[in-house]
Image 1 (tube, rainbow, N blue to C red):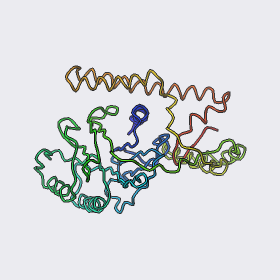
Image 2 (image 1 turned 90 degrees about the horizontal axis):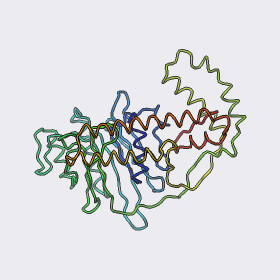
Image 3 (image 1 turned 120 degrees about the horizontal axis):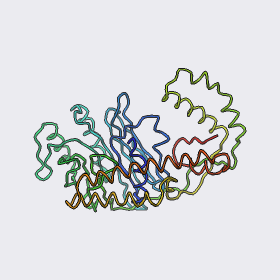
Image 4 (image 1 turned 135 degrees about the horizontal axis):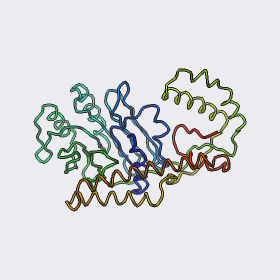
Length: 357
């Protein structure tokens, strides 16, 4: 995701999405903190051992859902079962990234699991499958691997609902369902940051069960800050960080502070709510992101040039960076005088939270 993470968070706020699927996250363990978005559960599968790839699903924390076990780590995909309301059926939402040069053996592992999952429950599967030679109008393909994929789609009675190119002239990003009437309002359009892939929006036509509207949070009112400080001060930082690179040093620093946090700051249950708007997302930036989408639409209709659209993209990116930097600078300069502000700034939902001393 890189520098697109902040814009993703802003778009989620603007559009009020319930579920967001992402491919090619490029995440690793160092992104545990920055990937969290307030008000959403994050399910992710990172690529291990080499750069790139990875998939993720953000699901509103008010929905009752669970991740299904992935039997093979060589396939970059994940499945989340969202429980239906009362007598309504459950729905499985999946996301997959298939690299352009993926081996046929890995394809077959994925096809086997897809067959098992689509057999019982309603399924919505999205992702970047990298089959540019497939003609979805006639269900034909030039390459053998692509024809095998079409065979899998037909064998599992799946329907592909994206009809427009999603990367230049190629249709790479797909939306597959196994039930008629399961999905509606499919739209292709808009880009995240400077990505060359189009975003796909759609509605899942069903009612999800709301889970218990309580979530664990850090209770700073009962925190023992004396213990926290003493634990942090007891770490021989010069020895621990000696010879460590920036990434290794950050991971070590974060781990030690997490230990202190677990000991000194108790957890409590609170009512969940819609995620808060990030402190750096001001009204001007909110309007600029809306304008970016408007100019994108003009460009697609031939009423604006690609250069004009790129200018707006770069402007939004620059303003996001500036707004975030100004917020962090303001936080750093007022932290001693305003004790409550750091907790407001740092209060993002996720597995780990680290706050200023």
